[in-house]
Amino acid sequence: MIGKNILVFGGSGQIGRHLIRRLTKNNHMVTAVTRNIHQKGYVLKTQGNPGYLEVVEENIFDQESLKNLIKGKDICINLIGILFEKRNNTFQNIHVNFPSIISKICSENNLDQFIHISALGIDQAKDSKYAKSKLDGEQKIKENFEQATILRPSVVYSVDDNFTTSFMTMLNLLPFFPLYYNGKTKFIPIHVSEVSDIILHIIEKNISSEIIECVGSQEYSFKEILQKLSQLINKNKILIPLPLMIGKIMARFLEMFPKPLLTLDQLKLLNYNNILSGKYKSNFDIGLEPKLKFEEEVAKYCHMWKDGGEYSKET
Image (cartoon, rainbow, N blue to C red; front, side):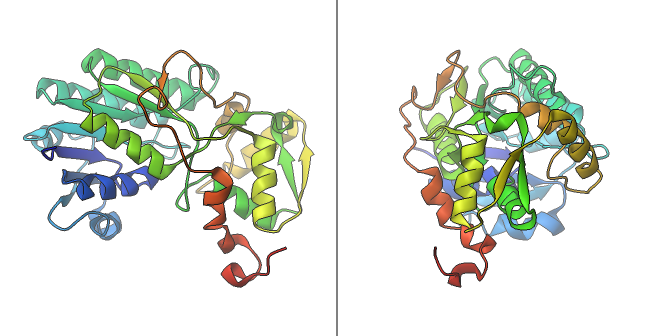
């Protein structure tokens, strides 16, 4: 396959770094956009094959700059997303306004594909600002770029994530771990490398006009995930179901920190299953069955949370 010219927003994030490696390895020319090249550039420049990656600094809301960036590109991939709001980084700005702007510019410039990362389960969680903003963003994209492909992954995990790493940190620090909604919420975690494989497959098979739900190989309840993480780092912590009111008080307290481990909005999301809806295609339907096992993959990096690190004694 002849390599494509691909513009990537959100390249310095968990999915972005893995995706850039996959794309450049397969002879695609990548332009990765960052808001701060001095802070993120050195990370990004080490991800791609030499000669196949350009890193540029731009204001993602400067439409004239975006129009210049789009020229000569075949594909645009938007990976930008936030889990909590901070100053101007609101759900409305990041999940709705920016996707609306960039998808419209891509359509006006006749790009071959527009690929957007959304989230699984958002059409259930109507009371969540995060979920509502993701849905509104999808709607804007479909209005502007009818052939867009939208991916809705379940929880994405890896050594660079904000999921397993946050919970292992909390399991290390807390004498017990609070369970919200009795820990019954279901997830099908997918490894970041398999999300990258899905995006590459969509590009190379020229898949368009789809919403695709992306999941891993195994389904777990929230309680089961915490139990497995606890076992992996040799921490036998008690999991205690807490009343929702106490959960809200804890979330409001944690929201005061620069990078909160839990917010009120995230607490709302925990009330909804993060599994296949059956309404849309999944990665299984496009021929990509996940192979990686959650427990086996986390075991490769969980030593950082064990007493003694990689030299800890297994129990």
